Length: 239
Image 1 (tube, rainbow, N blue to C red):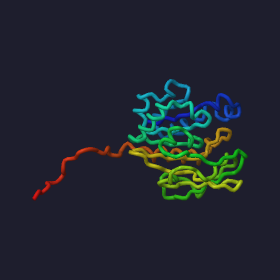
Image 2 (tube, helix red, strand yellow):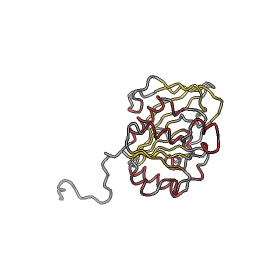
Image 3 (cartoon, rainbow, N blue to C red):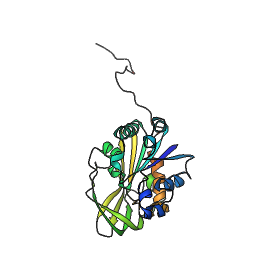
Image 4 (cartoon, helix red, strand yellow):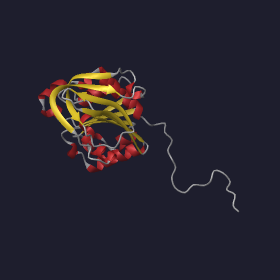
């Protein structure tokens, strides 16, 4: 499997708190633990040529992991469209935290993907609501994070095909924090935790969910459908 971890890599350059937590970037931490499962893991960032997502890179990518926050509008429209098309063609997509507002995710969802939010260093408890799903393998009844950013309903997304996690926050809000979708041949997993000023991506349970999510969205074995005028498989008897 060829995995690409994409990140704006802007907070890490501009915010010393983030740089201290993620000296190799959020993408670096995610790529490191995904590298324990897959030999071919690479990173790409916003300021690289074509955002690191050239046609050659995208054509070879089986799963794309996307993190973004402060620079969604700097993503080139043509590249966002190319990523969308690759998902429709079968590339898996894992969307993390504030990438709910990315051009790619909004194009695939067809909605605003807006929500409530608050930064108050509050506890988050992510309840597993589908314990039979492969993405929750190895996870208990819930994941508890001591400090996270709050996301609250209403989350303006289409009704998920599968709801995996439901979060409760110390301030009282709840949020659909793990959800799956299918678009064309592609599979998509949205996973909420991961605010840049907290060390969330070092949490082993969060890492486990992302690792499971990458495996689940991998869609290389799905047959390619044939469209258009079709010859009959059986003999058609005419009267």
